[in-house]
Image 1 (cartoon, rainbow, N blue to C red):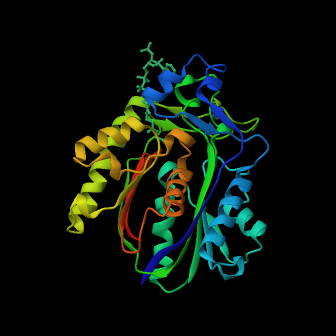
Image 2 (image 1 turned 30 degrees about the vertical axis):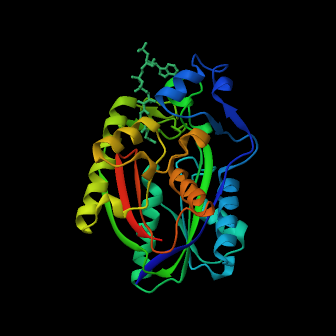
Length: 317
Ligand code: UT7
């Protein structure tokens, strides 16, 4: 026994920041951002916290699945941009929802939503849970260096969530880690210990764009091929690929290499930018609410990011 997705939800802040708005902050242009990244606008927090984003997405997923907070047996959440180091995002969402179940966070940056699903699958397999809430929420606007045009035009804020229930929808998955901090890194607050002799680092997103780009294209292609092969499937049998929304050119290139039509890949980076752990559940919620999937359709979720890490899973809707 594993799980099926019972409902989805998403939430983004009201404040929309266009590429033209960005060009007033750093030396960039709407043309460059559209062409090189594919983002047209993003949603950036003004007063919202990460907890609030996650809570709102969770409420919508609960409503969409017809689940009450007291029915939840587990809440798993992911963020690299939490309001607090502790309590965790999941604990704060539990409290706001009025739920009483166990709650904890998993850190796997942009791949994290897939790690939440895999962890939940273990609980379902052991018959420990009937309903699980998974949430990815990010306020990356607090982690970007607003003077670095290479990153601040890409990352944004938002949250996505799903409610999982007993079922047989989670078919297969693959996870890879290539540990290291030379390609993407978000240093933590250095502290003020009078004894520390470590050089403090600025607690912003540092990213080697081109290295990440290459890693991402390879990861998407190898993970999708692996899942297709392991399950004896052809690309035609997959209704949608839901990739992490990091750069439209990454998705385009993966499409070409995989010889799959771009129409199979769900793309919404133009509206939200890169929201890390929230990007896949936001896309999933849009697909769900637009009615693009019917019962039995196969989809592949595929993610990559800091760690470095990449992951993919095959789901029957
Ligand atoms: O979610 C985590 C995973 N993250 C990713 O997957 C991100 C992957 N990487 C990327 O999406 C791309 O590498 C970036 C969008 C970050 C950068 O695009 P690029 O095509 O790799 O650009 P680049 O870093 O090679 O820079 C090309 C030029 C440089 O100018 P010069 O040195 O050629 O004169 C940059 O300074 O573009 C310049 N540039 C910009 N120009 C206008 C970099 N950022 C900007 C900007 N506006 N915002």
